Amino acid sequence: MTDSSASLPEPIPEPAGMREQYVTEGLAEAGLPAGPMELFARWFKEAVRDTDALREPNAMVVSTADAEGRPSSRTVLLKGFDERGFVFFTNYGSRKAREITANPHVSLLFPWHPMARQVIVSGTATRVGREETVAYFRTRPHGSRLGAWASAQSSVLTSRDELDRSYADLAARYPEGEQVPVPPDWGGFRVAPREVEFWQGRRNRLHDRLRYVRGEDDPGWRVERLSP
Image (cartoon, rainbow, N blue to C red):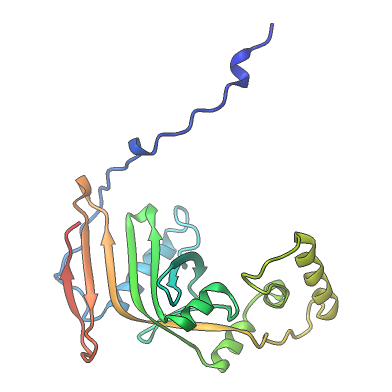
């Protein structure tokens, strides 16, 4: 006699019933630094220390829009930040790079869910200098440097084999230990922030949201508290 229940499909989890009660220390205006980058650095250090719960704390969602305003999003890795902004690297022929060229307004989201935190950045993106791109490229693992050449990012492939063959040809041309040049169509973007929101989850969905805002001609920052 067979067990008919073994063939039954697994029930689909119901998202409406999924929730967590955030019990965390709040975020208050008292003691805030004058600018957002100092607070971001503080939160980033805490995210890095919490690697048991939070993988790749430098992962961020980059949202762009084309010239017609149609948005797109993807996850990339933050590779540097300072008072000038947040830096990531990509193929300049990729969809995000093409959209930034047409519309430089960009949003970044750091989804630090295990810490019940988010950081949301709105700003404008510009290409970093070639020297900065070369310096970063030389820190990448050998395989990642080959991958930057092998992939014409966002272009259509006929098959996975096409990509694997391209990588294999490059690995033969530049074996381990050989210097790999920087692709001419590959480099970095720096997102200069205009607004930076720090989101801290709180009990009963009464979250803390503090947003640093800078005016067009104002070098200073003001802080606003937003309703959750």
